[in-house]
Image 1: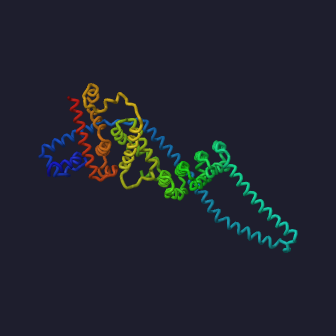
Image 2 (image 1 turned 180 degrees about the vertical axis):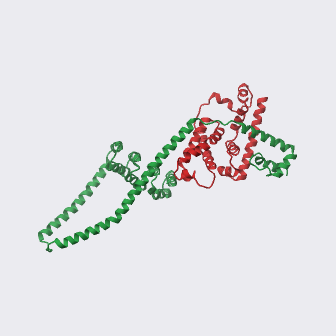
Image 3 (image 1 turned 90 degrees about the horizontal axis):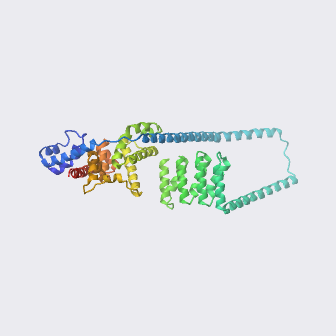
Length: 277
Length: 178
């Protein structure tokens, strides 16, 4: 063996963990080559100096900060577990409801039919007066339905045409409520879904952050995500569902991650959030 | 770490107690700055918590930790280079100076300071591989995993870094004795 391959083994020969029987060729060469001995000795000397360098200890700040961080994470993990448990309970209740409701409805129907059979008088042919009244009621219902649609549409128009500042003020007022009821949350979700102003939508989402444990809030944000066009709001929404660890968000996030028309930062954020879920 | 991944967050406390010392030592030598090393070490444990779900049982925890540490240190160097900073006159003598003078002599009279100075003059990648190989009890296979290169390349880089350190260290020694 000549000097070049022997020196390539020096890294391992200088490693104390390398067995004494390893690299015998290089060791033999080293024993007889003064140049390699000098090279090896200088490297060995450098490593000895490096090993002797004192390593300072960290200040207590590192430990304090770490345990504060751990505690914070444990609290957020505990609240997440509670939220998951609550959701499971809700789902269980909902499944029971799905099973029991039709059974109860059928039983009620049968009971009503039997009671009706026994107590109802013999059927009579409807008189012309009754028929006229029925028709009148039907017409009134139709008109009422039309009016409701018109009123709702004009309210929405009015809401969207008002100054953004006013709407922002309303959102801020709703956000200030310490214990908002479903109506207040509904208003915030509605602003997030429908308000034409990016600022109002962003502020609404920000206000919803503290209520991300509410099913209605998470569902509202999920509904708004696919229709949102603004990348800023999209990114905020992705952060929201990731922070809420909302497993229901996975399909929407996948959709966003694969949508080539969206900005790259939005797609990347959606992919990162999916990984977190 | 598997327990941490599965929700037993207290287990990370044990890992912290076992590993924060060597990790801090690596970062102090790598960054040359105690406060920065603490901040980076803090970020490493923060990322462990954040990305615990991504931990896979296909390598050693230490290797994973240094993988994160390397990334965090890179972020630190990037931020430090991007941010304008005032030069502290007390640190001016830590930089190598070809022309020997009194302040230089005063700084490098201590061998540790000399070696510290030599380490600081190494290329960042060279310093990193040298510190990983020498102090962290990692195998070259693990180092190769951290550096995302082959085992052979990791060995070559470690050897080259050691030679570079030796050259700088000996040069500084000669300047001191001149």
